[in-house]
Length: 482
Image (cartoon, rainbow, N blue to C red; front, side, top):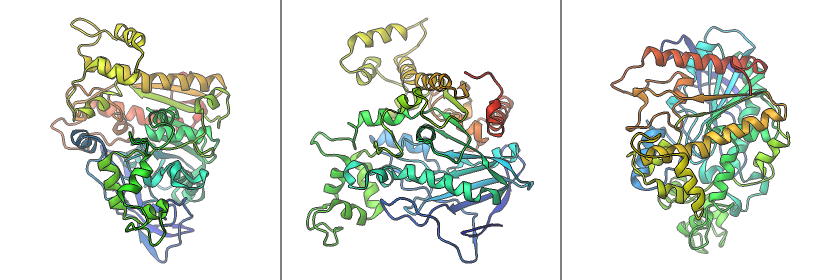
């Protein structure tokens, strides 16, 4: 058991996967009070008596949009097995070595999922192996996503409260500062790390000069992801052909006019109406209609021109490690066809760089397709172009810009694939494939291919590097800095 200001929590001791030692798990501890829809997180309530923290926490409500094959593919890859979902979801998991001891380094993980899906309790993010093998305390919080976490400008919320998901992340870090000592962790030795949208979140915590951590790891994502999302969405919730935003479309679908079911006599107030509607119904509408809700510039959690802030050195200058995977985009292109690696390169180039024929031709020359050439198919070339454009180059740029302003910066490139992680033929080193290696959760899904010695060794080496960086950020993960 662990005694916190908010009450006593009883965890469980278990054996970490893949030959790890003993670990104490505390699952689903609230880091905030029960969620009030569209309101910022508030401090957690106090428990009476002992609360058992042994059941996996629910994910916040997730949204998987797209065509039926795309949705099925993304759910199979990113949501397997599907967790419970609940609106009251501001909880976190703590994994701590069972050997006791104090003043351990702490790593706080922010999951990815494009700010529309994901959860800190997914099996792939089980921190048991990492905690047991590396003698480190691992914390994995939830945060709200899609319309519940990022309702957007049209919601009418105060400007600095429109990115609720980012406020949830800050609340989780504050909870860690107040409580992690009780789990054997040292609040002055916190490293934040995340992947994809989670890495963008980590980057934004740096660029908004938040406190409560002394190092950061960005896996396959930078703050530029949020800029790109807003560019695609017209700097607001994605506008539809009729000029409506996602918020307006949702209000219309819920019949938020004067006599709508959820208005409670509130007239035509879409905010009250959407706030009163059942969460499951909102999720269904957002998912089925493909409504888009993403972070917005709020001058608080998401500043405009994040990359300029970095170049100007206006950020929390803690040591950082930035990396990406060799074939990130295979998973995104294959998702469009439900997992079939087949695509027309010209179509991809037109979608990515519309109206820029010269540039498209240059790219065709730089990424040649055909027998005996660098890329054997349109799919291979298209996925490499998208990988370099969306992940490889932004990671390199962020690393260089950070190093130039005096931030101690390390780069990595993950380039290993294993049969038990393949998700379709030719998936290669896809986006998110490094996560099971970092967490030691590889081989946890049934596969006819058991883990190999090489896979075990590489996972161990990666855990060592991540942990070495967390324990002594100024010395880095074990290779030369940028």
